[in-house]
Amino acid sequence: MKVLLVEDERRLAASIRKGLLDDGFLTEIAGDGEEGLWLASSQAFDVIVLDIMLPKLNGFAVCRRLRDQSNWTPILMLTAKDGEYDIAEALDTGADDYLTKPFSLVVLAARLRALARRGQAERTPTLELDDLKLDPASHRCRRGEVDISLTPKEFMILELLMRRVGRVVTKSEILAHAWDFSYDGDPNIVEVFLSSLRRKIDTSSGRKNLRTVRGVGYEIVSDRPRS
Ligand code: CA
Image (tube, rainbow, N blue to C red; front, side, top):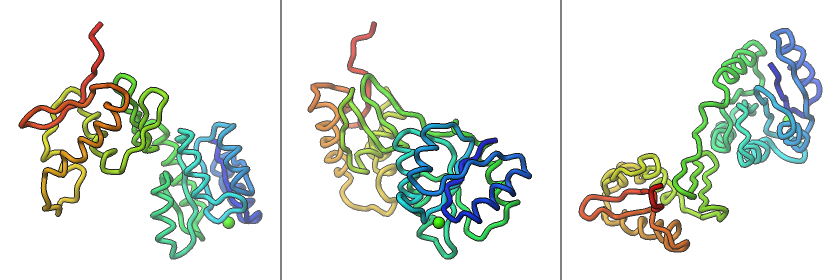
């Protein structure tokens, strides 16, 4: 199993490599964030161990850029003691797991095995309908080659609809999905978001994927003639 270790503390990196070798892992070391990003983008690794405090490019930035490039190699982040915000940010930027320094090599090896087993297959695939593409992992929406900028709520609503292509989703389902359960404002807010969503994904490109089903809700369907 091949591991990329991005860690600038040389002695720590060397001892991790040695410890992992005893467990059958082959470890490549990158001493800063840029080198780590370059290695991760140019070679295949089963798992990446990423320190946060790194020269040139920190661990969060490396993680985010890899995910932006659709690199889904499992990432374990090394966080500082008492770093609960680090942990939250690590997971938010697309890391799969974390370990707080100092850690035991036995635990690290076990976590890496678990991550490698899980592999890259569990990732949410891109949702597609006609030339409309929605990537839940990178939070990107495109119509053909054109990027569409959606607010987080618009994104959540479109994701819900695209997971149920051709099925009507009711207003209350949308409300339950995209709003906090404690929301007790006007349910017609859904219409406001849907019309802005329609403007962005359909009207601006002369398309008609998003349909209103009167008195029921909304559905997203292909607007291309059946062949
Ligand atoms: Ca460091």
